Amino acid sequence: MVSELNQRADSLAKGIDVDQARHNDLGSEMDRAEEAQPPAADVECIFQVYSAIAQLATARQVTDEATLRSLRKGASQALEAARVSAEIGANQALIVSSATRAWMAHAVPAEASTWRVAMNGFADNVETAGPNFELSDLPGAVSAAAMAIADHSTPTAEALRIFSGALAEVNSDEFSLGANWNAAIARLKDGATDEVFLTVVEGIGSLLERREVDHSTI
Image (cartoon, rainbow, N blue to C red; front, side, top):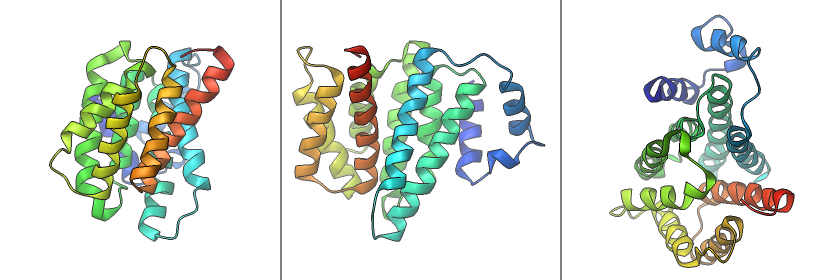
């Protein structure tokens, strides 16, 4: 199942327009998925995370063309991978790992190696949780990504290490995941600038914040 979803993520990352793919295997599966039951609440929440990231990526104003392409194309392909994975019945861990890997092909070229290693570390950690993956597992996955790029010295690596370290420091049962996450974002903004990474964590943070308002807890 993991391999199958990763193959779909690779296809999406290569620029396949899923809405035009009605005659290939992926299109056929999507057609069948339209008749399936809606995703469970936890799966829908994961999809909403990628929707929030994509919305923020679209709104982000940047002047660097490579960064802009990574934001727009990467976020849209990650969202599409999450949507397709949810529609064919994948659990939340596989949705996250598939979407994560779909973005890798659209990393800023200078950051491509770091992005690939970090996102593979993140996705591998998520996959170990399987159907039991929850949003509360995100800090552990972030830590795994930071460990994977320990020997990298790119802006993305610096941003990831700052955020992971800040998240570990502020992580407390006394506060909600959303509060801890957004406190780590505040430290990230003070210590490093990486528009793509910042967009991803801010998108997640906005979703966590909305859920806390709606449900009082995560």
